[in-house]
Structures are given as structure tokens and as C-alpha cells.
Amino acid sequence: MRGNLGREVASLLKRCAYALLYLRPLIGVIYLPRFLRDLYAYRKISRNEKIGLMDMYPCLLDKVTKTPFDAHYFYQGAWLARKVADFKPKQHVDIGSSVMTIGVLSGFVETTFVDYRPLKVQLPGLACRGGDISQLPFESGSVESLSCLHVIEHIGLGRYGDPIDPEGSRKAANELARVVAPGGRLYLTVPVGRARVCFNAHRVFAPQEILNMFPGFCLADFSWVDDAGHFHVSGKPEDAAVEEYACGLYEFVGNLNV
Image (cartoon, rainbow, N blue to C red; front, side):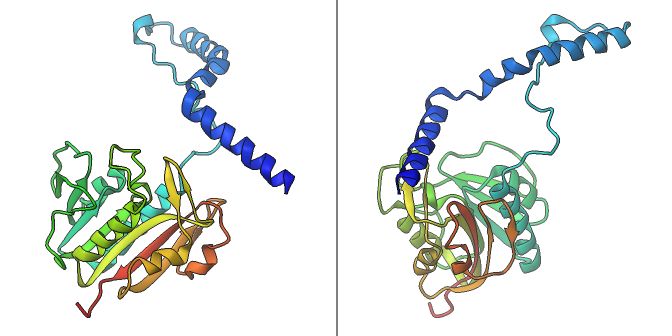
């Protein structure tokens, strides 16, 4: 018990230090000598190419053996693209997901992107508008294909300037459920595992809790990314209950009885 408490305290201190100090840019100083060695070697080989001091752009942390990536965001984007491609909707609506994912998605389906902080871009196939997930700008039962990836866990914690509200995630879920057309698809991803509030970053949900938020909806598929970053396809929500901070990927079919 004492050992677990010690690890939790250490983890808390690490998170606070990261938030307050953000040491990553300072770590680059360690690799400055390597940068200077590479610069010297390059200049020695390419004697006719001038490298001006004012044109320097030191990148000090990228020399790694494997490409780094965020497993949650990589797999959820790939999962969504495949799901939407299979479903073939005429139009797709996304609420606040990764803009990188949505930019690619709009390449093969007309996409409307809604975010609390409006995205100011111009791209064929993509329409962007401001909106609040607690009051979505769509008629009830009007959206055939809807996604909301790694979003509702933040609602009500104030992280992105939204009002403080302990019921924020549940209200967001209610709005998503309201606008999905009968028989339409809702693609939702959230952190799952040991249920808790990690203020003010996010909430983590018990996998079953998400099912309870969408009564009358049918769960068509559940996949997840585990704590080790491994992607599991088409399992059961309870399979992810033992995780600490996994990513649950839920495909729901809209309520046919409304």
C-alpha cells in the first residue's frame, strides 16, 4: 500500500513539474555539442555552400531510432477513416477531433468540422464552423455520420476555456446522441480504464460508463488502444476495464426507435 502511494505521489510531482516547468526545450542543450559537430562536418564536406548564422534552425531532439507517435491519436484516426470509408455517408460531421485527422478525412467525404475554437482554414471538401458541444448547431436526428474523438472527457474542466461543469461530459454525450440520425453512425473515442477525474486535463471513464451514456444506441464495434500502445480490434468494453489510461473506440448505431 505504501509503495503504491509513493508511486502515485511521484507521478503527481512529475505531472506538476511538466506543467509548470516544461523542461523539454531545455533538454535540447544536452545535444548542442552533437549539433555543432554535425555542422562542422557538413561545412567541411560542402565547402562551396554557405550556411549563414541567421539561417540556423537547430533541431536537437529528433535523432531517434524509431519514429515517435501518440498511439491514441494515430490509431483513432486510422480507425475513423476506415469506418467512414466503409459506411460511405454523403456527408460527415466531426466535433472537435484532431484537425490532422479531419483534414485527411475531408479528402474522400464532405466534412463539416465544429469546434469551440473555430478552425480558420480553407480546404475543398471541408467546412468549418464554431460551436459548443453542449449546444450543437444541428437539428435533432439530422446527422448521418458523426465523430467526436478524444473530446468529451475534457468538457466542463475549463482547460479549453469552457465553463466549469461536473456534468460536462454527460451533457456532451446527450447532445451527440440528440443529433445522430436513426440508423446513423456515431464514432466516439475517450480515455478508458480506472475511472477518475485528472483535473484539469481530462476524465478517464470505466468502459461500461460510456455505454450507459447512450441508452437506446447499439454498440456496433468496440476497439481499444491499451496502456502499452497496442491496438486491439473488435473486442468487448470489459476487456479494457483493467487498463489505467487506454483509449476506447466506440462505434454506435443511432437509436431506431426515435
